[in-house]
Length: 329
Image 1 (cartoon, rainbow, N blue to C red):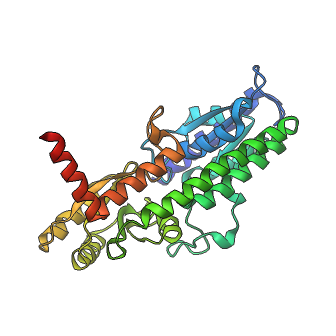
Image 2: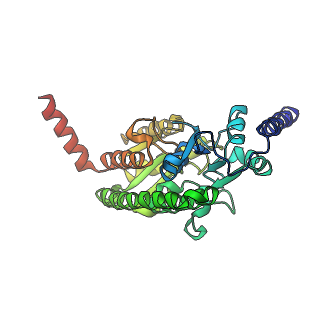
Image 3: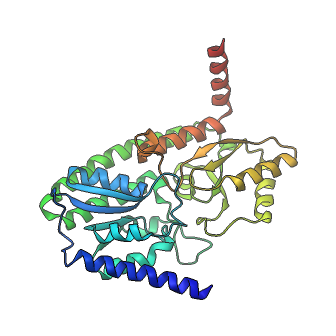
């Protein structure tokens, strides 16, 4: 097993070195034949923000699409080639892409500019990980105000990479932040519609800590902040006991995490005599499909919040059911 792992690392490092050699001595500030800066983003969440701030001046490729879990993602040889051919690589940081750390380090040594968007967030605003001492929860995008800090950092980073168009990047960032300010206020108002006693969000893994802190909703995740370690039977039973005792009306699965864990919790809750249901599927570590509202950050946040509010606010659920019945008549 050790030999296999060592050989795999050797192949990856060799691929990085070979691709860098083929790329030649191109400057970090070089741009493509169409005059645009070439950027690779790890997740589509990061790619969405970089594309908005960069506008017409950059070409963005995201390595991870809908439904991809960045905690478990490993770079392929094709990914290495794309990163080596880019002017800059933007990634989430805070160990979100934990299995790609060595690749980022290799890229830096090979002259590629790597930028963690979370480096623009004040560390005092981050949530420390109870499981991984000295590290932080990387799911900052669920606090819209924190994501605004990351967006501003993206603007400054692109300005440093491409000084001739610095004013355009900064203007794009500020315009987007204004939209995020409105989104932030809408989320706060929407979550406040859930009765305080029902304001409990139970999900597959602990990705919504920033969301809970920012918008006053308790969050319970079956797994920790990373999906690398799996939940055990004791974790399932402990969460089921809490859900049954507190009469939490709905549980939520996630688009990038297997639903098996939450389904096991639901079965364990029902075995205790309480008929909990699945309230919907939330986007956690990835956006939705391209060309859908959920394929953008703002659309994803709106979808999640509407799903949560509809499932946890009994009056809204009754109103929806009544409306559906009237429509059927």
